[in-house]
Each structure stands twice: as C-alpha cells, then as structure tokens.
Image (cartoon, rainbow, N blue to C red; front, side, top):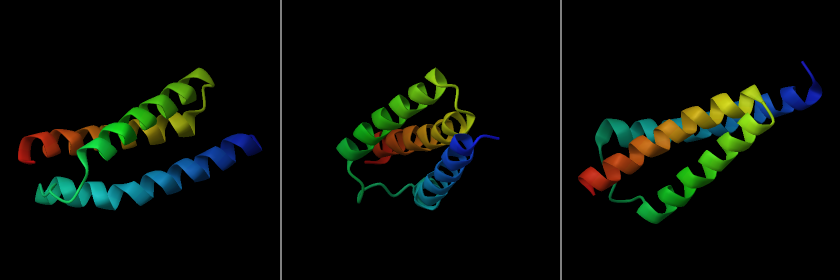
Length: 84
C-alpha cells in the first residue's frame, strides 16, 4: 500500500467515524429540529463531489468512506424533510 493510500485511508476512516455517532443518533431518535436543512444539503453535495473525485482517481478509501457518509447524510436529509 502506498503512503498516499495509507494517509487517505486514515483520514477517511477518522472523518467517517466522527460523523457516524451523530448520524445514528438522528436516525434512531428521528429528531431533526436542531439541524440545518441547508447545511445538510450543502454537506451532501460536497460529499458527493468527494466521492466523484475518489472514483476519478480510483482511491478506494475515499470511495468507501464517502459512500457511507453520503448514504447517512441522505438518510438524515430524508428524515429532516419528513419529520422537520
């Protein structure tokens, strides 16, 4: 494994792990009043672009981490729209 792949894997794991507890809390409790719809829309778009970039350079840690994070962000967005 190259140094670049190792560094990107560590960064991807840490940033995804940092997001997961908040996402799981929102998914479990369906409480979305305190989160900003605009922030999550912009966040999801940004993650989608990071995912696209990861695919373009074929960096598997970026692809896996951003796929997971995007799925969680979209789930939160859906709940924000449904439960407000």
